[in-house]
Length: 312
Image 1 (tube, helix red, strand yellow):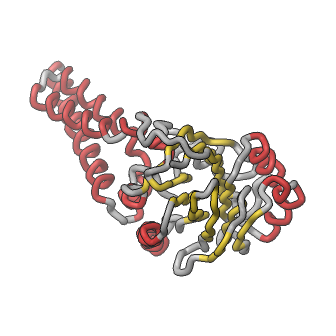
Image 2 (tube, rainbow, N blue to C red; image 1 turned 90 degrees about the horizontal axis):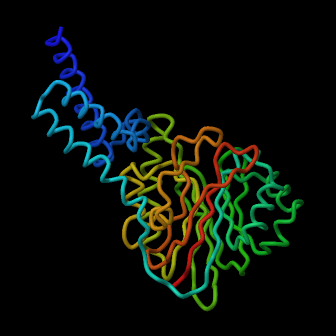
Image 3 (tube, one colour; image 1 turned 120 degrees about the vertical axis):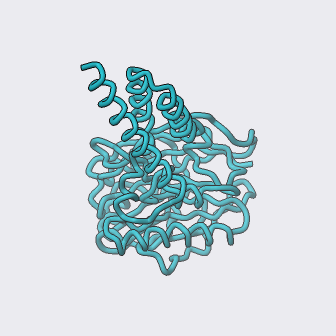
């Protein structure tokens, strides 16, 4: 009986190690096959599988298995640790409050969005899946009184995006050749020029859409590199930190504000039982991220993300 138990423990242990290593490789190399794009969202939990493997190998008294499982555990847990460690410059410039929300085909409660803007003293609001009806509802709820400057591309269903700002917006532009329609605009805060973008990457829900998603993230990174001055890109990236495509977009000279603030593994989608952080505020790495947190907005399938940042 003991021999059977040990054999079973070894089989299960090595299976767990193999699966963990396979998914870790997918995470590291950025595979675009649709199934793996979906599965890599679970990468933060690979440590549970590898720890279980350690326990099984220890029970089976396999020194080799235990050693391999420990190394794998260190690797899969180690790549998640930086998200819990605050990092970034010690700035003395003006502080900004940035809020981004996917409004679920324009169904999110506009009054709650405006209340969130008011109660959190938001300076910049980025909206995705912005419809003409949602713009009307936001205006009726008083958004223009709090953030009087805006540039929007309000479109049916999920295609639209928009920006609202406390400071004047200039050179508002729709960005072409994306699955959805991001918008960008410039603003100046205490003499510092900023480029703002409300971004929505294609959802990788089908093989064709996954290809577009990959292209959207790569193209957005390329455009970000062309901007002068400080950059803030906020929105629904349809990607987590475990997708290499997002890590590339948010790599130096940019950073994900949540990671820079050490905000950890908070998740934003789906809103009722969040499994993945798809929504981000990405900034130039010379911006200090003070805090980043999710906010619930009724009737949206995403949680909003509120980022408090400080300019150089």
